[in-house]
Image (cartoon, rainbow, N blue to C red):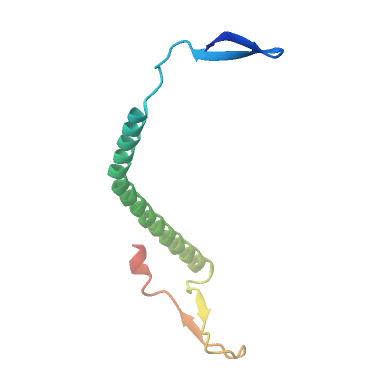
Length: 113
């Protein structure tokens, strides 16, 4: 916005300048800005429940994808290891010469399908 410079009386060796806008009243008023902010806040409050539902659905899809990846990994393990399931050592048995193995493979398949 261009400003008009009008000289006033000199003060010492310098002139003081008075600046006025060329077109006064072209900005937004405080009321207009507050109304716009209130409308934006209202729209956001309407959108938040639908966004939280979408976030919940995305988490469920990510969980299902992770379970399918586990299923794929187990099937690849079965193919490479004579159709034996991966196993975990029992934390109670600390004897390395006589380990007690827990065979996994039942129960979790119902979650993958």
